Image (cartoon, rainbow over all chains, first blue to last red; front, top):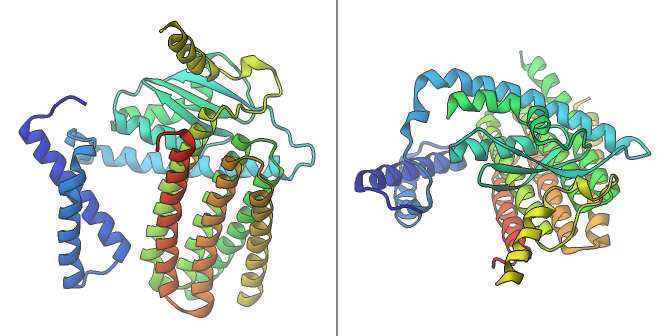
Length: 170
Length: 120
Length: 86
């Protein structure tokens, strides 16, 4: 990991504190004053020790103009999730198990670490695919019903509709 | 109003129950670890989210906590399945392939690594 | 009506748990057992939330949350161990 400047380290620290505190608020789901103070202290302590593992320092992803794309992404993702479940249900129930599994690869156009993480997790929850490994910009995907082995075709089949939106966000 | 929420909640409960059952059946029936992960992760993610949201609709006071649980499931399930799939490949449990060796394009990464180690 | 649907849902979930436990016993590798454990964790979370509704005890939802977090960390640790990185 390359060394960061002091201001970047400070942003990193405060962002990780904020994320941890939001997680605390969600887990306790109360606004009682003693809970909030405890949460602030605990998340401060954890942030002190772990903020150097927090990948960050691109604050531009919080721009309000991108909020529309975030919601659009969630909408597309939800539809894909339901489709994938119906797909799995069909395969599990049918007595002959119609599967043709294999591991395929493709190259992504996303450059940001967060974008790649979100794309990998989304791929895991979309029809018939499971991300196995990411090496630099190459994704290795386990596909339950392999239709094509060509990387460009695979990219179009699996990742394109998410990547289009993610490229606008990250 | 109350009745509509209750009906939505009950429908979500029923759908969730069916998908959780399919998740269990899927990991029992599938032929290898990767396919089991596929069935187990996807079906139980939607099933769990649906049951928890259903309870949130039936008991409107719990909806915030239910949303926290739903978000947690949506984040944690893909991560753990990804970690398990990679660990399984590193233990040399190669996937079950119907179409022959060219269907496993991940193998080349490990073949390259092994060649490098031999050349040293 | 409400009770009826809750019973049916519970029945589906318990059948799912039954098959997952069968896979847990059958194996054959450690990774398969961990997959079964992961599935069982998610089903048990949903079951705890449903039981919280049946018994009207909010504290069970917290139990489900803590169980989910611990199960997730447990699966990650087992995966790292199987990978040979631990």
